[in-house]
Image 1 (cartoon, rainbow, N blue to C red):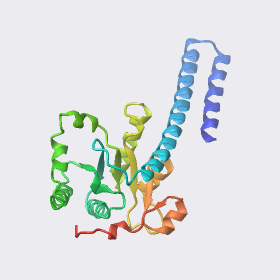
Image 2 (cartoon, rainbow, N blue to C red; image 1 turned 180 degrees about the vertical axis):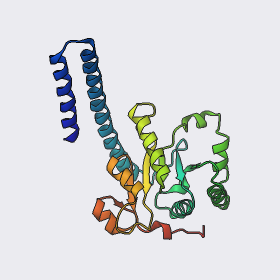
Image 3 (cartoon, rainbow, N blue to C red; image 1 turned 30 degrees about the vertical axis):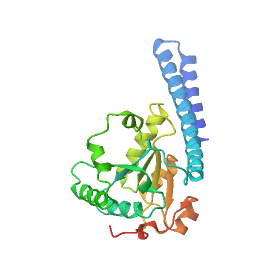
Image 4 (tube, rainbow, N blue to C red; image 1 turned 45 degrees about the horizontal axis):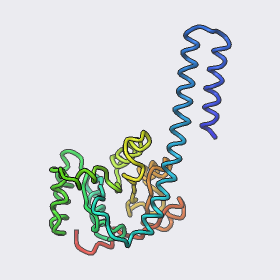
Length: 238
């Protein structure tokens, strides 16, 4: 409703300027206002379409969770510094989202040696170190071409994860990548017992990601998916 009011106001201003004067400046302003209105309308419509597609994808993913894994799919994990990386690896080992059944790639901030070491240790223990090596040397064969975009992007913060998710959403908004790829999933920290973190709220209110929480109180408050205390369900010591 607020967007409609803004569009109406912009249109009214443009018409008023055009009525007052027929100068080239007024005509140019009117054209700019019309273009802005059109862009806002199309962007909003596309955003709503993507949100609907995300929800359909979530239902189909849950329905086919036990089916054969597509060899051309992979998950991308956005790792934050410090405790965020440790917590993400613990949640990956839980098995709630079947992380281990997919090829995995990691997005780590430049200079974050601690996160890199954690990932190498984790993959070495799983006897899958090649998953991280693939990030440095992408395959040039047919499989590599078909794995151009991740099926899902997982993050648990901090704000870096939101900017990655926002960039992925904008790429889909502009039809640069297919809407069936780069499905964004945000897993809230176990430490958030009663409310979402700032990053969680950004994902929640923009609607660009599925938000998973580890406490029932938070799930009931925001009407989001409760996944249990998966950070404590790791099958191995991380």
